[in-house]
Length: 245
Length: 241
Image 1 (cartoon, rainbow over the protein chains, first blue to last red):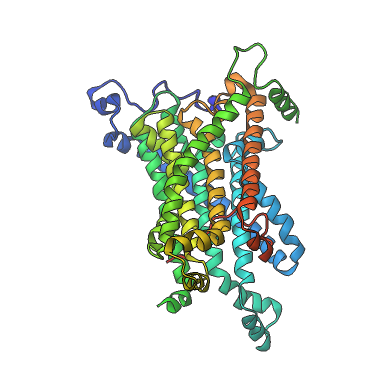
Image 2 (image 1 turned 90 degrees about the horizontal axis):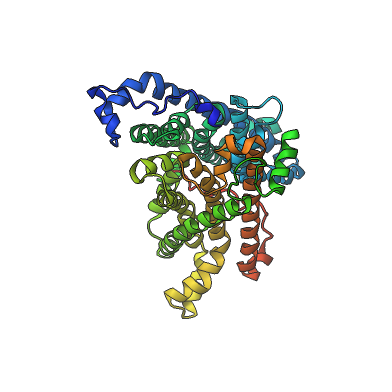
């Protein structure tokens, strides 16, 4: 993928020759001026793309795996093949999967390639957690729902899925941080997201400020996403906290 | 599809590209990848397993073992490698540090949960038989915790193999990622061939560890419940709190 960086200047983002860029030329650990100059053109767009990539992948992965989990919940034989296939997808290292998808027709160096690979890493985690969450709903609770005259569908939507929420959101947490991490590697394929300034900062000569800022943004994004999902879970399942107290 | 045929020919030639200057062989790079991953795993194992097992044994530090583990696992690997390069420069030191740092949390969390979660009745029974704390750990808690401890080791090992190849993106040379990072020399067929090698390597490591796990699992546990082959793939997530 050296092609991607062919257009970049020899020392990317180091700045020009005036004394204003002394920090960049000395390649200090952190040059605040560089950050403020490049925030709007490099860093912010990369962050936005990263969030987009992540949201799309987690959303598609969530819909697919929920559909699969609901199917497996009713029809047991579905579980095993889905587990085996998603487990193999999960095992293939990201760098390899991106490259394996690239030559396929319709993929290439595109966002599609990145997203398909990212989605494939969410499936195992989301499928397993959702299915386990549903299976762990006590039989008495299901019987009670039926006793109240609920149909299968009503019981699923109003009783079983809400009770499975903690497990489902726990799955979403791992899936989300996994995708945020792998989306940085995906920059190799589609040259967007926070991986792209990281790769640019390293492609010709190591430019420290960009590495630290872009890397730090990816770390903070992952921690923030994880924290938001914890808050979401507390919001959606207040009873789990009431019991803990 | 032609690319895939070429990729297998590339593997057949052991990574040599006709007409190009000789490059490191595919076998060499695969073994190097495995070696780096192995060293990083060894470092992480020595730190994580005793700590996790000990915390589980004394039933303390669940916050550290579970919550910090979960937060730690959120760290994007390429970002950690990149930040490491800024401080330590490109080299094996940075790669090993990043890999070991990233491999620790799943193992601590699993080792803690494995030992902490052993049925208290068994521990009480063992104590009633006159076992010391050390004997309880060695003869009761560790054997019963083996499946979960191993699940953590497998998660970490997979992650380390995968991240070793990613380290090539941060300039470190000496793994299969080198080929993927150098399409100019190796062409798309070479990149694909290396990708296939990485995928196979990860699957082999996973199956080898699964086999090893079966060997060290006490017979009683194997009889008690036939564990699903895939159950160890996914790390445990502590109930969020």
